[in-house]
Image 1 (cartoon, rainbow, N blue to C red):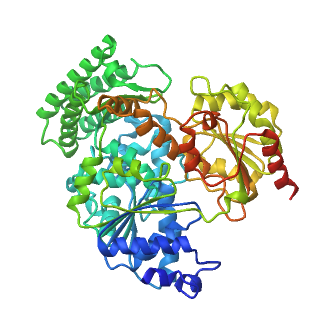
Image 2: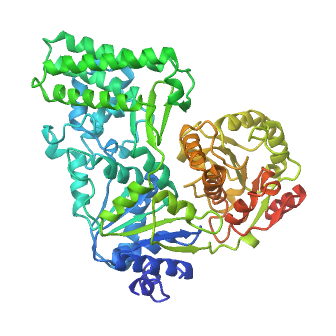
Image 3: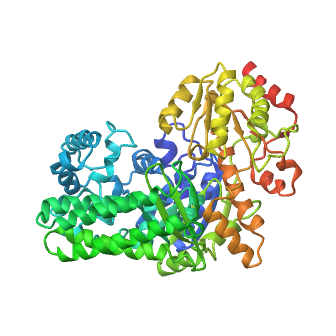
Length: 640
């Protein structure tokens, strides 16, 4: 095996990478990946924290002669792979293989749309957007890649980005005057020419599901596909196999119609009126819902008379705009493209409102400004299986959290995997020595699935006080996080950081620099966060992370499972919660020298039969239900 030799004591990695040490589990994974590549097979690998799975799949991928696409769950890991890990491996292996980083189109500057809106800025854009688009223009004069990620002088939440980037809907493709200089086109061309391309799961499924028109197939035929953070695949895949329409898309169409009227057909005042009517209808539909962000069942909403009327008006205004745009076809590229979008949105709205169709989840989600209406298929396994069958490629799926209990059945069933080799590699960390799992014995079972804030704060304060370093408190709901934040801040002299009061990276930097901070966080901090050393000595989880009962996609899957006579709790809810819990628990021990306490404040781990499934999926930590034992464990760290 070529890969195994590279990992040996006198191999390429040991010679060229400082402090590199061979690890049996890493070599085992590298050999399995190499075999899968050579045999055009399918491999599923759960590699525990500290295994070194990134190097384990990069080495055989780089040594193979074919083309490899590596897909990650987050942009952060994408950047790390491309800018740090791949160059390190290529240098160590003394290879000269071309690599490329490819993101979705919304990450690249569109010069055509930037210039279009700059010309109309005084009349179309609000003042804050006018200032931001000038900032973008200055940056555009210096950038080579056009990657919006370089533009760090604007906040991530700036509303200017839709005006200076394109979507599949509003891109002119080869008809664009800037096509030859398009940053997205250049990035895709570079990806086609590279031997190794780093993308993300959203981009992969966008290409697989919709074949991003205007540019041909986004990803060329590849020999090997490697999915890191593969546990995210099932949920991401469902987003791309359905249909979605948002008031944001409709509002942007309305604004583009006004720009088209001013720049391409100023003699057709009806255009501006039709565009404005659509924009107002989109806003009126959003106003039918509460101001605070929410998510729910679209089928149920379509039974509400006010929403029925608002949707009917929206449909009528889309039809009116379609007819007006049709009269102006040929007057300009933007008008023609707006007509195409209007036709597409009309069909999408019709599909989303046909809620009597079975096999789909119909759901909505609101933000403070917009509403999205969604149709999502409940089963993507057969579609993904068919896609894999069409490609004579090697497939590798890896993550630290793929197994539920003792097997990979849940993941394989969701993704339609068959004839797959499976490999489970435990973490090399010494969990019996480095950690302790504490499940409070005095806490009652969560009321309505959630502990009361008062009980929870009383349970965790002794742990926080005893912790020598920082503490992560991970929540399953924003509401609980804010309730606890209000109570706990007054009781602590330590710094208290709360998710939402700063970007993720800023909060993490503050947490590490403080050394003894308490960070209260939800979803995005349960995974992809790597804090090593004394800065983190305790991770507290408020309860078992079962999906919210009002989540429309989850409730639709449960209903579908029940209709087919299945056990929805055992087949859907427990496996999903187990994987999420494993991710949260994985924040604690990140290095061989780390020590820490994991507290899961949910007595159902001990009182319910399914608790065994959760416990068997966690690392082999010693367990206690006694508060004093947990406090003593933390104090020993402080004393040492």
